[in-house]
Structures are given as C-alpha cells and as structure tokens.
Image (tube, rainbow, N blue to C red):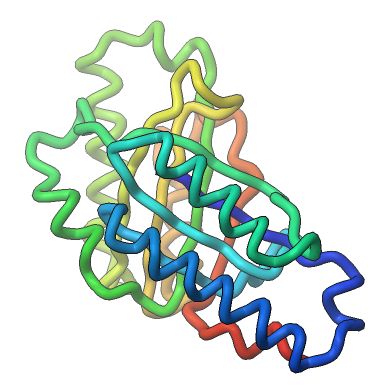
Length: 215
C-alpha cells in the first residue's frame, strides 16, 4: 500500500489553462491504466501539508506501485514532485480476532474525507507482555467503536516495521471531518496513548475531481 502526496511547483500555476487541461488528461489516462491493475486506487485533493493531490493505492505487487508513482509524476511533465510517501503492508492485527474482508472493503466507493496517520510506539510498548498490550488495545478499539460520532468511519491498520521510519500507517475514510476530530479527541484519553512517540506527517484529503488544478 502506498499513500502518495503530490505537490505542484509554481510553474504549474503560470502555464495556460488549455495546457493544464491537456496534462490533466494524461494524468487521467495513467489513473485509468493502473486502476484495473490495483486492488484499489483512490485520489483526493490534498487539504494539508502544502501538496495538491493524495493518491491511495493498494496492490499485492510493489513493482506496480513503483510504476504508478513514476507514471503519475511523469504525466505532469515536470510540474509535479513527490511531496511525501507512506508505504506499508496490510496484515491482520494481533489484537482483533476478525477484521473482515479487507480487499472487499478497499473496493467500496471512497468516502468524502481521507486521513493517513503514520505512527510509531516506544520500545517499552513492545516489552510489555502480550496479554497486557491486548487489553490496552481493546480499550482503545472499544472507545473508537462505541463513540456516538463514529458514524460510518472506516479504518485500516497497515504495518511498516523495517521498511519505514514509522511502524504503522492507519488509514481512515470519513464522511465528516468534524465527527472524526471528536472521535480522535476522545481517543487521547485511552491508555494506549502513553506509548505513542510519533504520529506525523498526518495527510488529509477530500474527494474531488481535478478541476481545482485549473484555477
């Protein structure tokens, strides 16, 4: 799985609109070409971190992910750059007995908002007995699951041990950012928070077309 944050440099905004439309048609072609090769491919307008686009792609083949990244950047004809990328792997959580069919969930239509949340925990966390960690994480999960504002929020925990500077990337899709913020605020009270050492950069996107790149 890759979350790719794409930035556009200043030159993009100074070229004629007709040229930008032509370039965007090439971007669209790349997306269509790869959409059938991936488990899922979703694009959002980036809200945070100073970039313009967020791509969330899921595949069992890392070569296809690399090819997609390079093809997207190339399609912008020198006006785009890789701002941030988050790479991780889907696998079952040791704290959740049944997480359902991930591939089926990934193929659902995207919700309005997308959040990519990288995380890292302290060494002390992993030295705790598993039973204790499981109890702590079950409390965390229950707080999120039962929160009254958790209406339709989807979450996916992915793993990056040994392949990134973070250990997890938790992906969220949410119909409302306001409700999402309230759920996250409540989760700050969970005991599991004690062992979190890093959670940045958080990437936030909104489901939009490419029209905002024509202003």
